[in-house]
Structures are given as C-alpha cells and as structure tokens.
Image 1 (cartoon, rainbow, N blue to C red):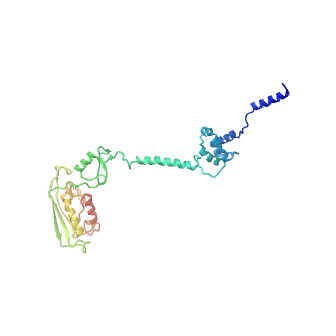
Image 2: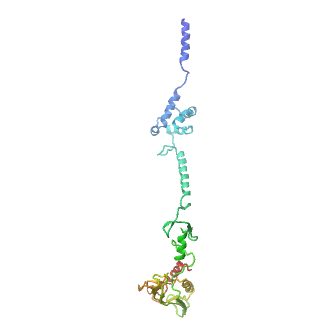
Image 3: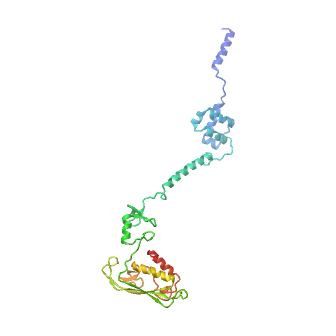
Length: 312
C-alpha cells in the first residue's frame, strides 16, 4: 500500500473510532447535583462551578435524574439557591422550604377538623344514666334541662320520688310531699309590727298550723307506727313581700310540703311531725338565733326554699 493510501486509511480509521465531539461536563454537573441532594450536602454543601441557569437547563434536558433521586424540576431552582447559599429559610427539622411546611400544616388542620366533627360536642357518645349508673337504655332527654336518663328509670323516679331532675333539680310538674292530710292552716292578722318592719308593714300575719297525732303510712319512715302531731305558729310582715310568701305557703301546704314525719332537729325525737326544709319564723323577736325578727335575709331565703320545691 502506498504512502498516500496509508494516510487516507489512517484518517478513515480515526474518523470511525473517534466519538463525535461532545462536552462531558453534563455528567459531571449531574453528579454534583446528585451530591447536593443528599443530606450531607445540605449541611455542608459544595458549590459547583455550573451557574444556576445551567442547572435548571440540566433538569429539563435530563428528566431521568429527577426520577432517580426524587428531585422535581420545579424544585430544582430551590435546590440551586440552597447550594449557592442564597437567603431562603428552611425548616430546622425537615430541611424543606417553608412553603412545603405550610402545606403540611394545612393538611394537619384538615385532620383536626375531621376529629372535631366526631367529638362529643357534636356527636354525643352513649349517655350514662345517673339513676341506675349504667348505659342509657331507650334514652329520654328532659326538655327543660337536657339531662338524659333511661326511660324506665326517670319515669319511675318521677312517680315514686318526685317530678324533679335528679341532676339539676329542675321541676317538672308539682311535687307532693308526705305531710299528713289531717292538718289545718289558719291565718290571722295581728295589729302589731315585727322588728325591722316598723315602717314597712301595716301589721303582722300570724299563721297557725295544727296536726293531731296519727299513724304513719307507706310514704313515712315507719309505716304502721304512730307519729306525734304538733301545733306551730309562724309570723310574716303584712306587706307586699309577706303576702306573696303567704300565698306560696298556702300552695305548699296544699301540696303537703310544709311538714314531714321524721326526727326532730331540735329535740332529736323520732316519729314526730317536723319542718320540711321551708323555714318559718316561729318567734316574734329575738333575731336569727331565736328564729325570729329582725332578719334581713329571711324573705329571700324562704323564696329560694319554696322555688326549690317548684313553688314560685
């Protein structure tokens, strides 16, 4: 082969073997990019020599890099800013830009709202009946106070005890006591003013209660046994407040709530007729210590005691 042919053959061989001219900086920069995404590069990142705009172009030209390392093209710009130490706040725990954390917090807030929808305030759990201390069967809600009981429990309580909520004492109907039905209540006006009402009354209202001895029935503590009767005298001022209280006391007497059979709080005797938590002023004078007047708090106290029994 001639020297000329040998020269041509060498050129042809070089053209065949040599690859086309191509810059290899793409793979090197991609490698730098991969290193920048690792947790170690975040804490002490190395600054590549490739400008930010070239790194963004790489993300467009090489989407396979995104798929392999979980870096989306839209976040690659954020990554470049991190690499070049541009001012952008990061969450200390996750190393994710604040915008991503806002989205996460919003997601958590939606989960909290779902919990609120099933909270006891909007969806009541099984109520506990305070009468039988068990889960309510056929729950019955009282219309005035909203407390819930077993239907059987609350119906029986209203019939055998009193028509009053066992929790908040709201009255439902008339409460009847166990006062014996053979007593009397008489009213008299005394031309004399009570201490403390010398300038606020016309006279004094005198109430006389009388009950003879009798025999206890099934509503009393010892059915079939005798009880001892009593005669009591009480006083009210003859003014608007006194007449109002007198009207309520008459209603309480009709509902058999003024007296009950039990133990005397003053003498300790059993099976006697005693006051049923509606206080009376049984002395004309002497103040509170002697159950008499003056007593500035008595009017309000006796009104509250009557209201507690559904009388108002």
